[in-house]
Image 1 (cartoon, rainbow, N blue to C red):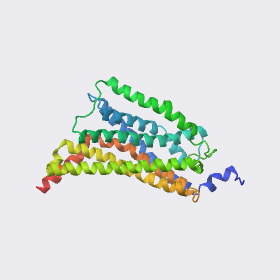
Image 2: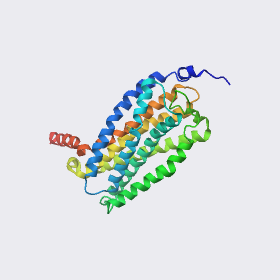
Image 3: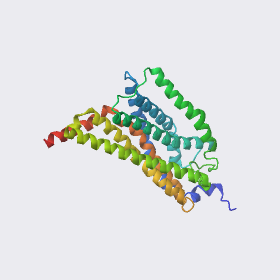
Image 4: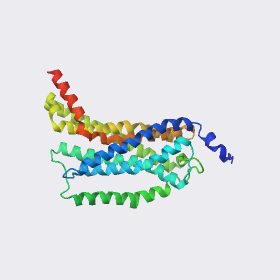
Length: 300
């Protein structure tokens, strides 16, 4: 077995490292602002009198963003110096947090959209907890499952064959295992199909409302509630869709091009821009409402 000196491993194994590092630094710097957006949104939500199931899901989604954003400074430092100065175990933790953020965010998006769509098709009022204690218990049970079961099981097996020393976020060697490749195919295909299904569903709802209310739809609260749901779908399309399409390509060709692993990290960074989803709630989309009203007036 040929071994390369550790001092040259970083440059020879990962020829695209400088390019991918330059691409990721600005993305993670921008993500720091996402924390401020989430904070403002969380404060406004907590000031509300009641907690619907959707609102509770949004609060938990913000907490997922917070946990991920705590690890962003370590990524910025690594991509600034191209050197990992902390323990390999902590590298695994930081890397696993990004993947966990991606999947947990996706799950909460699905919960939010399913609840909203059920309310539309069944013409029911919003689902709500009778007491705040029930909302707290619901959230606590979710995080108990995450930290009590999912996280220990995942972290104990994640990145155990990764690189050591000054390299980090290089765990592509796990794809040599056929079961890992199959799992990646299944997850990516499931995410892509789910996004396509919600896209079709939300387009159908918006078209149906436009047919029902015609131009007056822009003045109906129900229409703007569904626009907000469609914005969640757009976030899924922009942030999740490209990564999982590339992920399938990466899993198929990971042995043929070493640069794919660095490019995969860039797509992961773009995926993390979903932290800005809370912009949907700021100002309750007043800018969009004003724009729509202007368009309606122009068409009269």
